[in-house]
Length: 223
Image 1 (cartoon, rainbow, N blue to C red):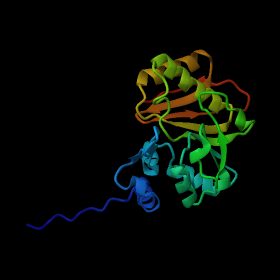
Image 2: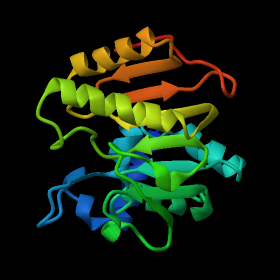
Image 3: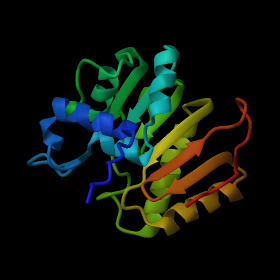
C-alpha cells in the first residue's frame, strides 16, 4: 500500500520565534517557563507570549513600519521577550523596560523603576502605543480575591494614564481566576469607563478606542 503524501503545513509565526529563542536563550530549550535559582520569579519564553497573543506578528510589523511607536514593558525582569524583539529589528529606543527591582534589567535598554501596584511616578507624562505585562500579574502577591481584584483594577487604571489614543494594554492572564477579571470589568463599567476588554484563557487585553481626555466605557468581553 502506498503511503499517503504528507501535507506540509505553513509554519506559524510563533514557531519561527521558537527557533530564534532556542538560539538566543538556552534557558528555554526544554521548557517554555524558566525559574532562575534563588529567585521567586519565573519567566515565560518569548514564543509563549506570541502563542498567547501578548505580542503578535502584526505588532512587530507595525513597530518596524513606524519607528515612532513606543512599547512599555511592566515587570520586564531579564527581558527575554524584549531582547528577541530587538533581534527581529525593533529598535531599543522604541522599548522601555520597567521592574520593581532593577538588578535584572539589561543596562542596554531604557528602563524605569516601577512597582506596578503602587505609584508610577517614574513614568512622568510618558505615553505609549503598547503596554505589556509579560509575567503573570497577581501571582504570589495577594491572598484574597478582593486584593487581587484591587490589584488588577489598579494596574489597568495606571496603564490607561500612559496609553495613547488607540493604544493597547496586554496583560499575561496565566493562572488568573475568571471571576476576578469579571469583577474588575464590572467595576470599570459601573464607573463609566469607556474601554474594550477582551479576556481569554491566558490574556487580558484592554483597548483604548477613545479620543484623548474622553471618558472610557467597557464595551466587550470575550472568553
